Image (cartoon, rainbow, N blue to C red; front, side):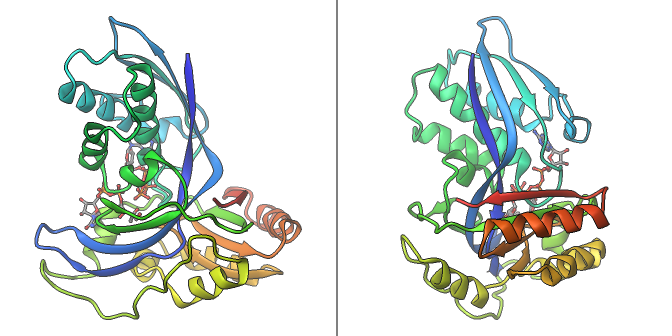
Length: 289
Ligand SMILES: C[C@](O)(CO)[C@H](O)COP(=O)(O)OP(=O)(O)OC[C@H]1O[C@@H](n2ccc(N)nc2=O)[C@H](O)[C@@H]1O
Ligand SMILES: Nc1ncnc2c1ncn2[C@@H]1O[C@H](COP(=O)(O)OP(=O)(O)OP(=O)(O)O)[C@@H](O)[C@H]1O
């Protein structure tokens, strides 16, 4: 049996530059990953492709043929004749439709496991192609390390070695679908958008340098997501009010928000205060990488 983690993806910045003629939005995003995540296992089996799913958010993700694990596996099998398939087991813990790419990370994890079981190179172009076809966030999740992501997710920069960044991730429990949030920007195909250029990020930035660059950035989907799920405004206010918070922002199309702290102690303290006030929210401390 092979096992891998499917970590949560965090968009530390998310700039929407415009809308392409194909309808997708052109982005610039510094993406990072957290320790919090799902776990996917795979047992090769010549006779079957199946998915067994458990864990606190398994019912929201769904066990059927639409699950992104099975969609990615089927698509790779179409691409590579004779691909050895098998039985997947997913321990689903990340909130669903939450802006942290849980389904994308699961799909990428499935592709990694199939690559390993079939002795394919992890950067095999057929794997990258299937990742792109499954969803915009899947390519960056294939090798989950911090990097710049551009285009609609298909153009990836070199890995960035982040400084120690103690973080708190919170999800206030409102699912947010990605398509309607992009649509609410109201951009027609071919339209460009105003906004300051993304700051350059060094290959190994120091903590103060990185925080200064992040502070100049933004998440251009935040306002649209807050209109759809106003509880995001409360989540951001909680994080911004936490002692030691240096930056708080929404990830992806929401509703998960993150805050960065100078010390792990401050992050742990903020998480416990928020948990006590909102026992129903998903609250995690994390070190981003
Ligand atoms: C917001 C992000 O999470 C940032 O990392 C991603 O751009 C979205 O990634 P994702 O959830 O994998 O998105 P997809 O499943 O590919 O697309 C869902 C829907 O979002 C819209 N969409 C997505 C990505 C993009 N660059 N422009 C878009 O307009 C499209 O309407 C698409 O039908
Ligand atoms: N393995 C899976 N985990 C989570 N959702 C899944 C999975 N497979 C299919 N889905 C479906 O995909 C949709 C998006 O879920 P996901 O949790 O990936 O969204 P997200 O966190 O908003 O992603 P992103 O940040 O990439 O926009 C949900 O409607 C869900 O039903």
